[in-house]
Amino acid sequence: MSSIASNPPLTLQLREHTAQHHKNAEGRALERSLAAGTLPRDLYLAMLGQRYLIHRVLEKHLANLNTTAPEVSVLIDQQQFLAPHAEADLRHFGVNISSITPLKSTQQLCEQIDQTAAKNPTALVGVHYVFEGSKNGARYLCRIVRQAYGLHTADGVRYMDPHGEQQRPLWEQFKQRLDSLPLEQDRITEIVAAAATTFDGISAIDDELMAGAPPVSASPGHAHRH
Image (cartoon, rainbow, N blue to C red; front, side):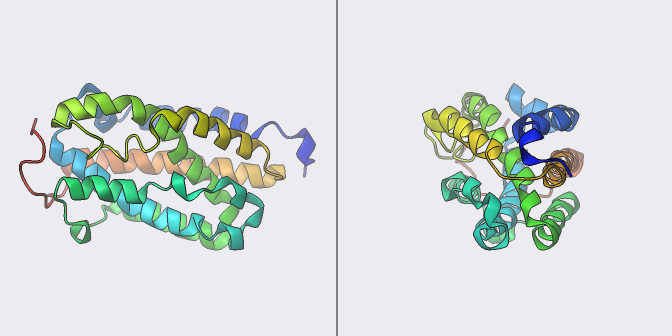
């Protein structure tokens, strides 16, 4: 086991060892369509619904880290949580939250998160890192998404841009806290593995959505269809 002082920074290890997983996730057809402004409205809502289910599970466990893994709980701030934003966006479009059914791939990722929380809660840091980092790119997609679905306010894209102009400083603060965590290399390796698994899980969900998204129960008229 290496000493903490000799470990490369956690953010560096996360970035380097998940780079291919990250690239694969960003390259999914759903992500490309979203960035091009051509993703159908129903698929956007289906994606939001699946993300909502994931965040609801993840954030329940993150909120308990002060008990289950206090050495990393300094990383968690409830303003980071995305389930409330996803829920607000879905409600804006008239989606019945209780009607959202998890895809097989969503269920698998949620089960992995539950298992990590039970067996190795410190590794939840890797899952959290993926979604915190995704906010950077999502913020730049907001203009495209608003235009695609006829949105003129933050309603409908709160999940995409929860922090506004504070996104960059909050991300820098998050990375600083990551690198200051007092973790041995074996724990860091587990965190990196959890991050890679999360990227792969998101890729699987995107692919399942594109292969045939379930119908979304939403009220018409909130946004344009494409």
